[in-house]
Length: 570
Image (cartoon, rainbow, N blue to C red):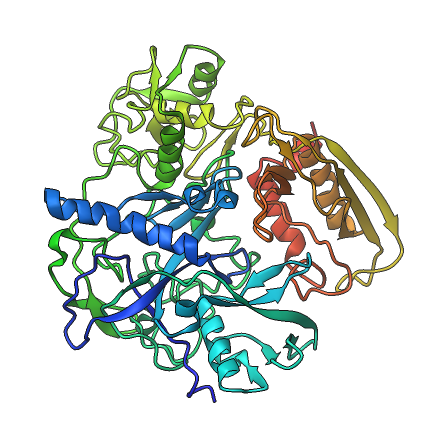
């Protein structure tokens, strides 16, 4: 059955790719954009949002064919397609989604599916989440389920797609084959996904043959974030296994967020689209086909597409999409007067007399020897656009004006965090609304910690009005699911985590106001990158016990927010 029912998708780039691919006829297909959640699952945007993304990519290319240019839009604000996605911006060069209110950064990808597939018909299969809402399966699973459903099958096994679930179409339930835990599923009609042209092979079976799967030389699902991902593939043969947030904790590419804005790459320079990407941005006239030469680390050689690299724009990649959408909304230039903001910048950075010639400023992506990329959006009478400063502890260098712009658009709490290595200068605070944190203990043990009792933390936050530090000052915010109950083992390390969580609570770092990644609701209280365990007796959802790495992971997350044991000695 698995061989007969194919996933039906292919990995491809934005519209505007060359139409002449040797050995393949251009076929009509539909394009589906998906984003990767904290557990490594891919979740599709709605058809209307994908149509907006495709149109945003096509418009500059069509205009360029008339003018001789033709570079695709580098950032796409999703709020223009769906008001509930207002905080989100997709940065095309890095293929990342930025969440403006919390700064979370997630990978995005683009897949092509057959026009007669579930995606082409606007059919979405969803599973019931812990909050009682509905979350979509990744689109290749939706296509697989729809094929099985239309063939009249009563149940299917998703193991061929990398999921440990049985699906019962009669009872409309999903069953975990190990734990036997069951969830409801549903089939829903939505807007069909946008039509485009496929220039390469679509999936013909579960064993995928698209370019990026060939790079991994796999015939079945691969449990890494790179398979089907549209980010630049790793050059090393050792691909890190990132199946959940706990496994991904040490990845520098998933750095912690220093400010209330898009996160920055932990690398010295943010990723750029390179000439060995699996797809190319639209080129003038659509000329040129793939050329052989991209050799993967496993020895498999597949075609790559030539990319004419554009000159980096003034505001590009790491903060580009967010900053451009902000500028578009206010249509004005930010003027910063000599005040406490500049004093904070000069407190933690020493101005350099000569800028390193070959280094980039990872905030604006311009060379440090060139003027700041924020010089046309942020003016300061006392800081020149070409001024470069070096952080006093970690010695990383940036344009002073870039750091000032970053600080001005953050919490303005007197602290800075290095965008490169995440070193914190000063005491970082957050935007958590007012509330109450209560602690109690009881004798029942948590799975994996049978030698001690349990600490229970209860967080209570009520709905209210957003302050100036929040995404939409003056607007109401909701507080769903409160009080929230969380659990720690009542042992030495668990009590240390509790003490640090108390510090984080006082600094307003545990919650923030933003958009729920589960329900999509905006202007609501959400967790702020410090994971909590909200279940005692099971870890089926990843939010419970046993989890032998949890305490170490949450200590690392707290440290990334500047909350360490040194805080307890103060």
